[in-house]
Amino acid sequence: MSSITMPSSAVGSEPPPEELTAGRRRTELSMLLFVFAVVAFALVNVELSLKGQRASTFFEYVIAFVVITMAAHLAVRRWAPYADPLLVPLSSLLSGLGIVMMYRLEEAGRNGNPSANGQPISTLSSSSVVDQILFLAIGIGCFVAFLVFVKEPRVMQRYTYILGLVGFALIALPAFLPGSISGVANTGAKVQISLGSFTIQPEEFGKIALAASFAGYLVARRDVLSLAGKRVLGIDLPRGRDIGPIVVVWVASLLLLVFESDIGTSAVFMGLFVAMLYIATSRTSWLLIGFFGFVAGAFLAAKLISHVGVRFSVWLHPFSTQNLVDLPQNSYQTAQGLYGMANGGLLGRGLGGGQPYWTPLVQSDFIFTAFGEELGLAGVMALLLIYGLIVQRGLRTALMVKDPFSKLLAGGLSFMFALQVFVIVGGVTRLIPLAGIPTPFIAQGGSALVANWILIAILIRLSDTARRPAPRPIQEEGLTQVVSLK
View 1 (spheres, helix red, strand yellow):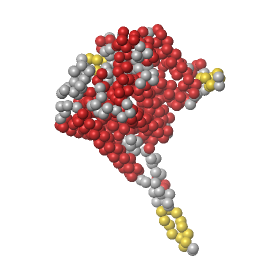
View 2 (cartoon, helix red, strand yellow; view 1 turned 90 degrees about the vertical axis):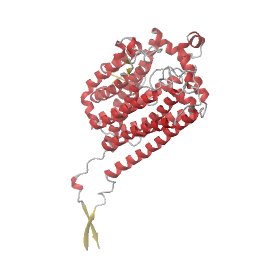
View 3 (tube, helix red, strand yellow; view 1 turned 90 degrees about the horizontal axis):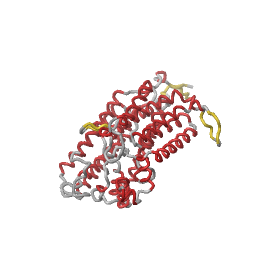
View 4 (cartoon, helix red, strand yellow; view 1 turned 120 degrees about the horizontal axis):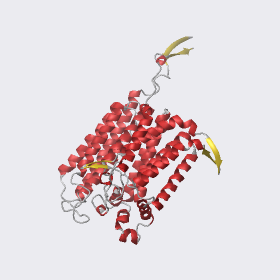
């Protein structure tokens, strides 16, 4: 009998890390090329549908979009090679479609193109598309900077309370400023800081800071918050001494609702904390307390505060004589958005073929209705599917990552993104009261676009951490097995 030695089949049975990263990045690049083709095709449709367009404008916009989004891909390839391959292409596709729709709306009333009054949309300047591309560049610049400087997401856990203070300050700041600086014209909301031509919405960045702060706080307090108190109607309620945090957040969300007239941010703020609390403790009672508490507070505010009551009245009776005829500023915008989507039907009027310019602020709060009119039900369902895929990839990252803080942060950010889409789409379709928050990636608004790319950067870093293979033990090198030959 003799024997020989040969390499163990256990060694090298999996593809080496270099092959795994190369495969993911090839997939990402392939999807980006598809995104470039879709955006270019959409711009061509706009060029052919409208008057006075130049081929040079098309190439300028396409080249700028390609260069900026390729920077995001190269940054991921260099600093987060194991990251999810779909997050950047999906976000880029939405950003590109937002630029296309901004271009279409900017041309209304110019070069002989139809508009509501024969003039360009008053809230859109001739440089709106250039501004949107510039904000996209800033957003991806912040995306790259985050990947470069934040190597491990757990670093943010060290600054739990600092991030919480910063987040609360950013969200509350507009409420303490004069309406001439913080107010949004014709809405009653105080959500921005406007100094001349410079405008920023600090709440967009405050929500991300609060998500990281909530994750750090709940990781530290998870065991205490998981303890059960009294049992009521088959539900184990939390102990009275532990209910303080949700009361604080509930009061803060109602203060936002009252003083800033910002239903959207108030709902996202409350929903984010309750969702992360549920993820941390797996206790249904926290969800019920948070949901019914916010609904009760919003109902009370609607009865006691006039501008909140108007929002609820428009939601319930948008076509009433009082809201549409006597006080057209109440529901004219909502009614026009609904008429526009109805006019779009199943397949839409085509890019440049509809009349979205009749809806006030169609480029921001109501841009979803513009897509509904020109791309139809099929188009908006495709948009919702893209949003759903981003949320799914974020939740998949939350399931894969091992660190409790990273798991909570990924789940919280994914839910916050989903809730933002639900709040604005539900508002313009009358599923819930209208809340003036930007539709992620596609609406006009530099702060929202930059903040959403920062959110994607955090998910990219978390997914890179979750998918990064563990170091191989040195002992495995040169491992052999003995095979006997008879």
